[in-house]
Length: 311
Image 1 (spheres, rainbow, N blue to C red):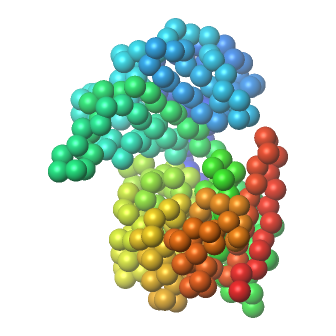
Image 2: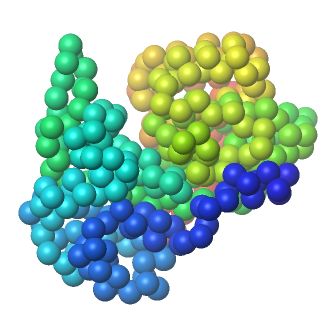
């Protein structure tokens, strides 16, 4: 198992996560970032590049201006070219979803002037700002929770609920890894519908964030389609999706549960009572898809976790 994991992770840990993410910056911006001090940069969460202003760094949830010149369109385009290894014109045609995934699982989010065709976004004509999010593989997050998410050695469908930035996707990813590698008992076949590329972060077909040796990933496909494809084609024992936000997402999860598959999903909220106030989530609770609710909270650098038993 460890040899397979090393093969997947090969080349991803040559540099620190912040160094991997910052490698797409032009020279002057990179030097400005280094002025913050490499010891502090080990805690870097995001870089923000906004046209007309110096780049900022998000360190322990505080956005701090870096020592460097204002960012203009030339720098924004250079970052995108570096991220996609292509010309800015070609690159913009690839980012209609609003982000680009980097090697290592880092992500460049994009804002600018949208170009639509037949009511759908096809490209960004101009860039106004970029966000470079630093990905850090974290394992062991799920371990203490697993005994509370199983019953008679069976994993129970689990919904992870939290506000943005509290670690929903991190916990989901680690649950997928733990179940796939057999930390909760016998190893399970896990399928991931990774619509936004945040769970496994495929880069040229290889997961940049380790999700287990018995995990299959479908990247960039809407949840409803993705779950259907995975259940028909991969015969999973567990299926995982991130960020249920729309009624069609909830319906797809309900249908998947009807196929006898255990589910892991995430949603924005503060607990069962909060979810019941919103129609899409209320439908999930009423359908009794999930047996466990994991509620995450974050206050500064501190996180807390509680598990609720659902009827």
